Length: 310
Image (cartoon, rainbow, N blue to C red):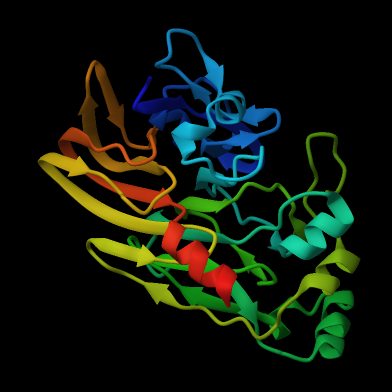
């Protein structure tokens, strides 16, 4: 039985994408906005390449539940991306699980960003200047965005949690690693009146946005050289530095996702460079060699149990 899975990402066109990620992944595609590096999202899946033949992650997950610690459900619960903003992303918000299931039969969307690259004095949009929903709606309908949008300065190495209900947008020049629930539900509040490839304005979702907004959410920025960066019921994020060799075994994880964010890793006959990922089997330890900075993302059995008991 395989101890680990090596993934080939799905490279996704976006209206705000550029050519940065094409260099990372040696692709001739244009306007790549997202590299879905750990994805079982329908029609945008990562492919497992070390099984003798290419296999979709969703197919392997459903057929090999022991590999994933017998985690419940047939839907792979996590989604890992590299997002490269060649232009400002739309101002948006995501729903929680209850709203998403009731209205769309999908998971909600809580996410975290780890800033990989950012220009000097870069800012993201995060949260609202006002907490009164009636006042907020009035400003939205009048396009008074400067009255309500809150800007926060970020830099390379920052970790930002973006819970469901939070107004947010990544801005031009920023590249992030994003870990999120496996969901594509995004409600756009504003998109700068941009035209898509069909010369039409992209759809906005004001009613859904107003229904799920939490105007009290405030930013917390974490910047640590190494160690656990974030813990929640949805996922944990940990940063490690590899100096020649490292042994990884997460006893309390259902499985462990490992993403290279700098340098390289060698594993058997494979070399993983920046942006590439592997998935480590439940309760299996693995020795990795190389010079790298890596992010581990996983669902912690103990954290999940504590949250469910509250």
